[in-house]
Amino acid sequence: MSGRNLYLAFERAFTANANRTAIVSADGAASLSFGALADGAARYANALAALGVEPGDRVTVQIEKSISGVLVYLAALKLGAVYQPLNTAYTTAEVDYFVSDAQPKVIICDPARQTEMRALADRHKVFAVVNLDSTGEGTLAAMAASMDNRHDTADRAGDDLAGLLYTSGTTGRSKGAMITHNNLAANAEALISLWRITPKDRLLHALPIFHVHGLYVALNTAFLAASEIVWFAKFDAAAMIAAMPRATLMMGVPTFYTRLLGEPGLTQDTCRNMRLFISGSAPLLAETFAAFAARTGHAILERYGMTETGMITSNPYDGARVPGSVGFALPDVSVRIRGSQPGVIEVKGPNVFKGYWRMPEKTREDFTEDGYFITGDVGVIDETGRASIVGRAKDLIISGGFNVYPKEVEDVLDALPGVGESAVIGVPHPDFGEGVVAVVTARGPLVPEADMIAALSEKLARFKVPKRIFEVQELPRNAMGKVQKAELRKRYAECFGA
Ligand code: MCA
Ligand code: AMP
Image 1 (cartoon, rainbow, N blue to C red):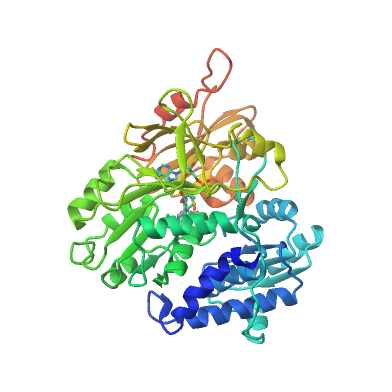
Image 2: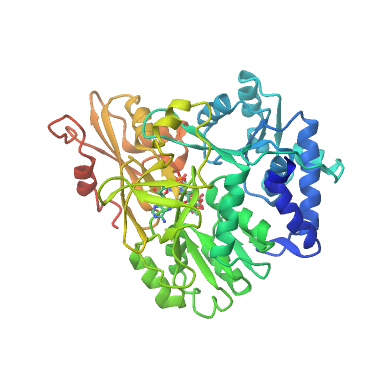
């Protein structure tokens, strides 16, 4: 049934608002109307189709943030393809796994990585590798420019895949979360109504568009509501403050808010037209909430989500936004705590993904018998339904909004010369919320810390690489022989001076 392709809903908004500005770069140098957005999406869809992409095919994308990159996302949806965005920080070794698992028809990469991606594509029988740079130029852009601006949006059922977003596990390899058209539509509609997003809004968009927050939460709501997007290639606190008087809405990770607070230019006057600041992806400290309120008069609205589920809970628009709490379940979403409180948060609803790509067993493990997804976050829910996250049952570090799975880093560390064992932990970091730290034992001569960090950076995305590595005689263990990470976290709690 064609009616369930999310792009059709976007298309209605684009057509009704054809002459209005859809996206404008923060410096004002580039802008696109909703009509041009629809045109561009059709051209890119025709370009991808010319490369052989058909509904259901995966399209892997690892490119710098650009407005043309948005057209690629829209084109993939329009074609009924499955969009697989990858963090630009991922190394070729990391991308190799994602491509081997997703088996895309096409890879879209930065021109600088064309040669290595072509080699990787040959290994995994990927048909085409095309490129797009941070200015929106490249072989794909050239193809799109010569294409027709009409393209019939593909028929899709609501539970057909729109996206395949990889999330690492506490053990084993990364898993591809299968996100459907219905998942995206349900979540975007709920957020638009909850956060009162309208065509009058101007959204400050400085998040990367390879994760759920910048891609689905920010773009999908803006497109469906026909709001204008003020576009930043990356987060820059001073540039954000310069654009703020023209904006009404912002979405960010807590690091955005602490960095904004570091700028004297953030004042009540700068925020005079702002109606809502939203934070998520990592815990917002109560002190950040309080300092922001004191400086600007705005209570940041904190919400909670996951790649597998989109947004789950949100503080209210009207009513108290409570620091330390992530608010109430979204409409149609059920949230509960397993067992006694605090306990693991479980969630069910139209926002919850279809399962892990080609991992039926892993999917079964992560759902309860009555169909709730087990988040791995530990929380409490009070008698009014208000939820707070108090910890994690999963061994996960969230640094500046990016997830780092210690096991993945430990495996690479353990393979370095001289390293006996390792334990990777997150400790308070003044900028990133949590900073990654490794503690290692030696079984031979260890190379200096800086060399270990350099060696890790060849294999792992930089945000996963420990900012400090400490050597110890032995790792603290409990009676069962399990490394006591809580003890290590205590020991190194102040190593970033937080
Ligand atoms: C950059 N670096 C980092 C991080 N970002 N290190 C640790 N953690 C990070 N998050 C390192 C780089 O490798 C580099 O180190 C140095 O910091 C400066 O790099 P640069 O690119 O200039 O960093 P930046 O621009 O200052 O980036 C910080 C940032 C960025 C703006 C906070 O990390 C960011 O945009 N985070 C947002 C993440 C996000 O969108 N999360 C949503 C996930 P070196 O010099 O050593 O190489 S979706 C999600 O979680 C769910 C669904 C939800 O609820 O939203
Ligand atoms: P991801 O795998 O990138 O989708 O990250 C999802 C995880 O981010 C969740 O399981 C939580 O641990 C964390 N998270 C997202 N929003 C919040 C929040 N507001 N407070 C605390 N943790 C959050």
